[in-house]
Length: 440
Image (cartoon, rainbow, N blue to C red; front, side, top):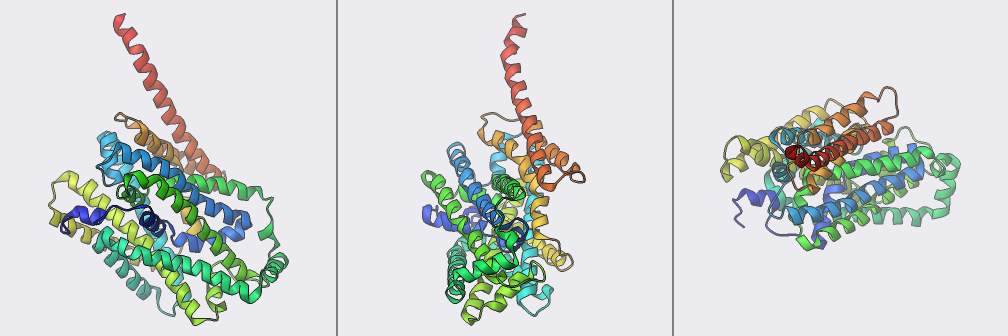
């Protein structure tokens, strides 16, 4: 493939097999949320919540594997989610979903950048602005400038660092402290973590799985990987990636329990600082720092690349034809603007990562049924189908002042689903009785 072609920027030079496809998916899906939301999930919902968090990503990838197989069979020549949407939606419906994709893309980048800012503040005695400038500069070089080829070049290193950390550090601690003292310490100081009969945690698990699947359904970077994994291996790749992904939150939960046993803590994020402080080996400290940097930089680079591709190929190019050179130039400009915006925002704001995750949960839940209709149907869909995702999102968000956040996510899912089902029934009845009207 010509390296000056924009297709090289979108998909890289090769089709991915199972092994490297799994590596690429893991590098995308093991994100800063895994690091920063795990402590809060463990504290709020106990071990059951930690299990639910691991099931969220695992089942999302496994279930989306079935969708990915359908996508490869029905759309063999497409490259992005925007390409599929253009084929299946009216212009108005297309722009509705594109608006949702842009919002969720920027929101996802913001969450990851906030995670980077928190970790930089915890681990390094430097101003957050300087740390974020260096960090986002690296992400811009990888995802904004290098494209999919550079992301693939670093994916193997990222995944090696991730699993090296979640395997080596727990083993190191358990050899030092032993399993029984850790269990007794948790039981004495934090017994609520071991409480399994927690209905809130069960509710959290099912809601997290719903959010995870919805996120996979419109994740721009995941869709791009669907189209560059070998067609006959795509479902197996997603299934294996999901099974392997589930081990990472569980391993990180065990790390947090090691830190907490036999002691209290100041706040949730102080647990991460205490982890660094508790590691007595310089080599393991370096490994943990590289792990954090690798996880978040990989996620931001992938999201930045996917968002840039979506904007250039599926938005700007619709208004006027672009040469490959112009597409590359616009990709550099747009990704640079996004990185500068993230740098300025993160240096000022500091919201809670888990709250950010569930803030977008209504969108991810409301988009599931409309996207299933878009992917599985064989005809161009009316505008009400994509519009139902916005109606469901707004309907759920309006109930937040009176209901639990988790309940409103299910409300969003049900509203959009009911609208889509009614539209399908109406279309079928219209087709069935149209001949009768003509004959009369």
